[in-house]
Image (cartoon, rainbow, N blue to C red; front, side):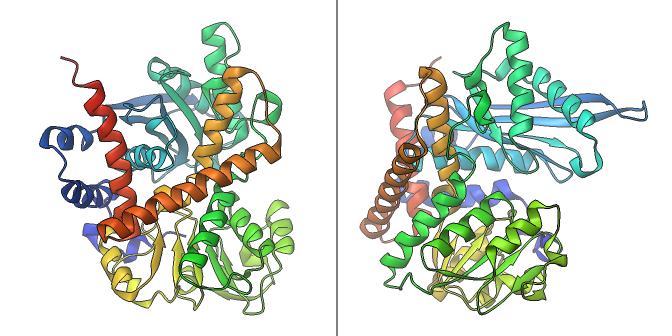
Length: 423
């Protein structure tokens, strides 16, 4: 899936890419130098060793990370990913993005992220459980419903969250449902959480089409990444009358100008298949998929997919960033010059953390909401947040991405001014 080998070297570091956008927004806000320094540095960076006894009895030590970027507005919130590509720089960038994301949609969380350097595809269920539980034990000192609330991310799921919740609860000597979000419904998970990120993408895509004066009915959509976020966004966009003409996973892209049979594609993937074996259209490379002629492109895979190398060939009129950091900072100016309307990741994929907040609230009060209530409240937050960003875009004459960062930094900085510096 990743196009890393084609990325110019100065675009590879996700933290520096993110911070270049932060710097631009901070300059436009005329941010106080002291606050600028605070907000440019993560609060905590924890690196842990995780010994696991493999099924062949060999002991292997994995490396894990957990980063708190900023907690001025509330407990740290952020997912945990299992991937051989995890680095501290990536986790720092993702924790910062979570800080700005929570501020953009105005929910009372700070930003965190975690990761373990491993290849879960080569591990048994027993090995993954032991890895998860030991990682949880190693970062226990900074976890807690009032301090740090993890969630699923790349290669982690409801089962992993269940293991984390059980491990934390065992140490606490009582069941603590609010320690993680994205849990199974039976363990205190929220209805609507699984589809929340993809639903949020669909909601802001509708707003962007209207804002750009483009018809919703028949709008051609291309989705890179057919995991939970991408497949949900594709399905919900199609239900609103859009036509999904391209999808992809890590094996290949599939293009069908007449529209892809999404039900068949989801059934195929749910049964354990990959798109390389799906016959719903022409197979194309992922790089080619990103450059298809369409109204809406939803990159919902990994970071650094749209760079200055391929940005000039992007034909989409709207990009809705379902993934974190799919567009590099150097590609921003190129897309802006081309007139591409980008819905930034810290707004576009904030549906997940928004419903995670709903789940945390439900766990804390011990009262659970209907799916209709969850989806109604999610729509209100996503639509209002889109309008907030548009107001910043127009009042400051900046791109939506810069407007998102300005809005988020403004909100976090405001709380820091009120709280002051403890010394």
